[in-house]
Image (cartoon, rainbow, N blue to C red):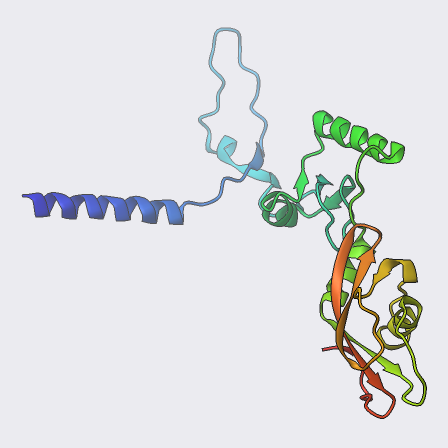
Length: 226
């Protein structure tokens, strides 16, 4: 008895699942009668039993009509779209499946618009910390996969300075790093070896970049990304 009941419940569950998986999406089809129904006399029903009044023509099928784009407000920086607070227009599928699903955007309701307008006002007044720009995000991703090689002369005594490291960033990695955004180890670097340097991007995020200090005879012909 118990086994039969379990089998019946399993079959019913599978039937419901199959019905759900085969259910068609809800779409709207707008049609109108090809022949207009004539007005009836007062107190009588319209004469719509004739078969010609059952002929319809298609006016609109929303399933195949172009979908309008979706407007959203970004809550975080998104590469290729904008930064936090920007109002963007994206396809509905991308907005719902990528931005809204990952909490990267919200609908531009009056409450959300007011919230981000107040946030922008606080940013202009300097009462709120800034967020990283799109170019800053790209720079961070690039530096996280980089290795810097600093070539020094071997016929003189030297000490590595932020100015020297900044020149090598521009020469080998094509990244302009101001000396004040660089931090070297506390101990002076006067010999070749493996070290690190910290780069602060836009005064917000700091990335530690591995750095090899070599002489001109030990330098490799390739520099840059690993």
